[in-house]
Image (cartoon, rainbow, N blue to C red; front, side):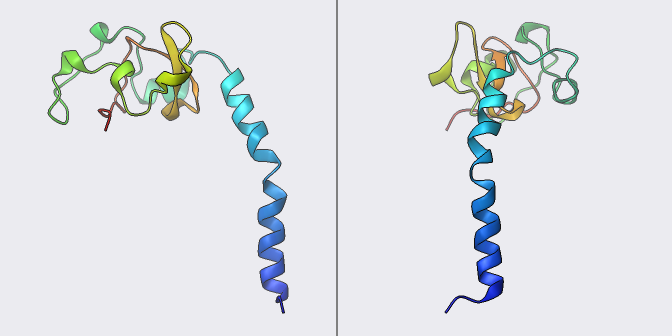
Length: 106
């Protein structure tokens, strides 16, 4: 027998499921990350990595750190030089760009 508490937990979880695809579609339709975006400013995102002040990180030289070789860059969905980035809610970032959230691919 299901308790009322279990029923309410399951019901509330099921109520959110239809919203998940809509949230992902909105993020993908958002386009490129604007340079004045608060998240872009916080992570010091630039579309040209050569203009960023970077330091060696995780054993990778600063000059080799690009969005295109970051763990959060979704290469499979690239559109030219731009692809979605998980750090920016799947909005498009430049492959030759850089941000402070850069992490090497696994």
